[in-house]
Amino acid sequence: MTTNSTEGAVQADPLPSGRQYHIGHGTQHVVVTEVGATLRSYRSGDDDVVDGFGEQEICTGGRGQVLAPWPNRLGDGRYHLEGRAGRAALDEPERRNAIHGLVRWLPWHLVSEAQNVVVLGCRLHPQPAYPWVLDLQVEYRLGRSGLTVTTTATNPSTTEPAPVGLGFHPYLTVGVDPVDRVRLQVPARRRLVTDERGLPTADASVAGTELDFAAGRTVGPTRLDTAFTDLVRDDDGRAVARLVAPDRSRAVALWVDRSFRYLMVYTGDTVDPAARRRRAIAIEPMTCPPDAFRSGTGVLRLEPGSSFTGVWGIDPSVPPPLAD
Image (cartoon, rainbow, N blue to C red; front, top):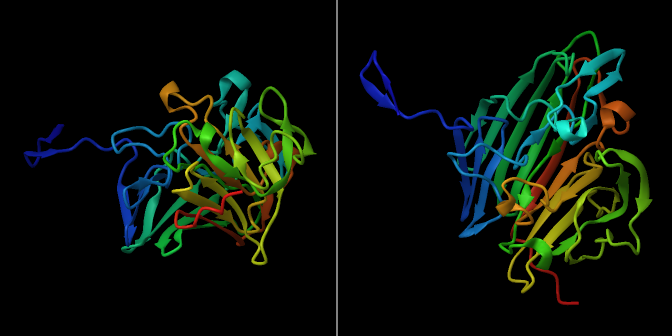
């Protein structure tokens, strides 16, 4: 505790993730934080829907964070886009990568809030890692079908385009630890092949391989830190991934609109502390693949004054599929 000597009042120390924004709908409750506009907690009734972190903790493993202006890894932290060079700090130094963009540790300001909605915004100013200006706004909305996340990226410049990629990092759970016994469905025909640094070198079909989860199957010992693509979509353009408990008592779905062309799936085999490994599965919507700022693949080009909006969501109310 710290004492304000001017007023003589005792004030609590600031929370590691800043101000906490609570929204609810029925039995659902979500907490979003000022730092990173991070999805810290999502509960439905007595059940955790995401494996988040505590109010007094620092976010670890990217839990619930917003990943922009690029998601996932950026080799050597160096790139050239739109005639400019970017030089980002290597926050995955053991692999010589920058990772997960620049806004996840920044304070976001409150745009608006209501009982079931909170909207946070952030301006990313030009810097060596990203020499453009970018405005981001994220809306978290709870409703009967779960949580909907709507993100808008705007280029406020009047003179030059800005490149951008977006991603999110929720860890989904159906209350089963470890995840080996969980049934996972990933609606993808292909996946990216990566090198020892986690950077894509090619893509390949998943059909008939250990990484084929298109029809849904038990995770077992499979280790995933894999970007899936060529997503199978419904008539509305949504691609839906699912986790189902082995007794089919619980299920959770993560869906993405057409803006998100990749789903990064991570079984948490390397997270710290070790006690949290394989406790949940991160299913990460991404508009572009890892290392996109070097390859140019999937990078959005925002013209001066233009915006881009992408939508995804989590639905804990979906009924488990029938038994095979």
